[in-house]
Image (cartoon, rainbow, N blue to C red; front, side, top):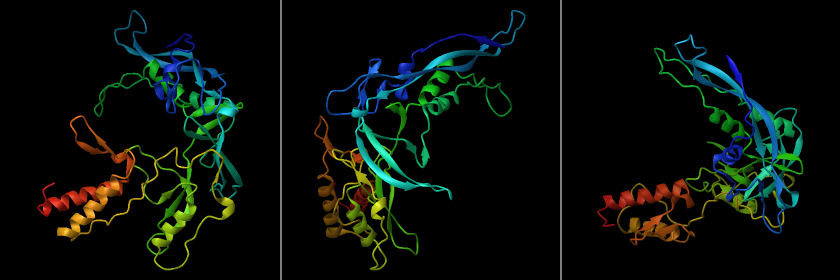
Length: 341
C-alpha cells in the first residue's frame, strides 16, 4: 500500500552539512551562507532541488486487519547544496595527474579553499560531473528500508524513519559546494609521501593525499607541498645505499597558489629530535633519551595543556602515533627500571 504526501523542505537546513548546521569549521545559521576568506563576501542562496523519496511506517492496512505491516509512503523533500561566489573560493593548489586506467589521459586537478577546506572538481581520478549527477547521488538514497520481521537468526528491525531517509539524501551531497554554477567536492590536500620501497627497494617520493584521522598527526613520511626537498632528504636518509631516491618529475609536482599555506588543512607531523627507545635501554641512558623526548614534546605549540589543578596533559592529536608509542615505551621502561615518575 502507498500513501502520497508532499513535504517540501522539512528541516533540510538542519540535516545539511553533517546534520549539525555547520559547514567546514564555521557556523552558518541563515538561509544564505558566507564562505571563504579575505574581503567582503557575497551571499548566494543555496542551490536546491525537490526530489522524491519514500519511507515505511507500521500501520494497519484497513480496519479489518489486526496485524501491523510496513506501509509505504511517498513524498518530496528539498536537498540543498551551498553556493559560493568565485572570489570567495580562491585558488589554492594544482597538480597534474593521470588516472590508473590504461586509457586514462593526463589532467590538471585544481583545488580551491573554502572555510579552511579544499575543494576540487575531481574525486580521486574521477570527474565530479554535472550538477544533475550530484543530485542523482542523493536520489540513490531516497528509498527507506521497510524493516524486517523477527526470524530464527535476527530480532525484528523497525522500518527506517522518514527523517532518516531525508537526512541520508542530504548527507549524500554534504561534501559539495557550487562555484560558478559547477559542483566541487571536498578533497584532501595533495602532499608528498615517502614510500618505503618494500623489502628490497629503496624509498621513493610520490604525490599523495593528506591523511587525517583526528586522533593524531600524519606519520613523519608525509610532507607538505613546499617540503619536496625535505621529502627527498628523508627518503635518502632511509635508503639502503647511496643511490639517489626516485622523486617526482618537476612537471608533476604540486603547485601552490599565492596566499595559500600548505599544511593548513591537515596535521603534518612535528619533526622531533630525540633518541628512540631501545630494547635494552636502562639507567642513565634511558633517562637521557626520555628527557630528550619530553623536552621535544614541550616544543610543539599547544601540545602541553594544564588543567585547573595544575596537572599537565599531552594533547596526542598534535603528535604522531609513533611518538606517542615511544613515550609510553619510555614510561614502561622507566617503571621497570625503578624510576619514581
